[in-house]
Image 1 (cartoon, rainbow, N blue to C red):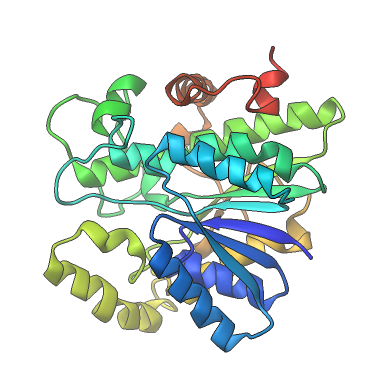
Image 2 (image 1 turned 60 degrees about the horizontal axis):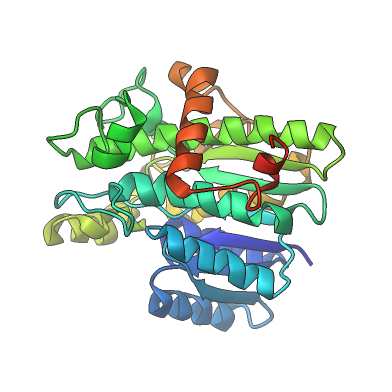
Length: 324
């Protein structure tokens, strides 16, 4: 039985992904900060599918210390993972918040926590090849498209980590989210490059791909919205999305995007694919990401900055051990 770890799987796309994976016979671990919501989500899936092998664990991606604790718990249990789905994400609308270590929270959760988690779990992932890592990104990272969101603007990475944007003052929540999604793509491509280098040296192969779920009303991204906007996002727009998805493919119901994410995680058709960007709009075909996303110097710069910010060492990750 394949074992899949999904971060943030208690609502929205993540929940639908977990449900689809469990229904398909995978053993699924739902990792989330809100354990009460995760327990309720697990119970909901088990009521619908009594045979489902689904469980939940606590994970706060906004705390690097908790990410390390979580990885130790996985290690201590001897859990072998086949797939890691980096799905959890936040978007702030009510002003800047900071992670436990003092980083801007959007960057900390959407990128930095997943960066550390992925590296710490790589030895658990490589036991049965081919293993996979799927990073949930977003089409809003592409500054050449109109998305209704700000254009990505990343200058100094330390400034980005401190403020979510190119300047240290004037926090912009949507911009911080867009920037974090571009970081997701840079991370995925550099991760895939480094994993391929390890595989060439005889290590078990692990692939890494990114996924754009489209605009998914009802997802957990509206948690920080004002109450009226949360109601529209959670209660009104999901029904509209279901009606409009055929004519506006950029809008996608959560169950559709979640099923697509599950398929990308486990379908044998994707065993050999890595460093690809899949969009929910492209009917299972990989598609180019933004021109800015292919800047290899930015991939490496983000990787090196993330190593420094997380305190990652060669003892933690085979990717760093290979460089030592």
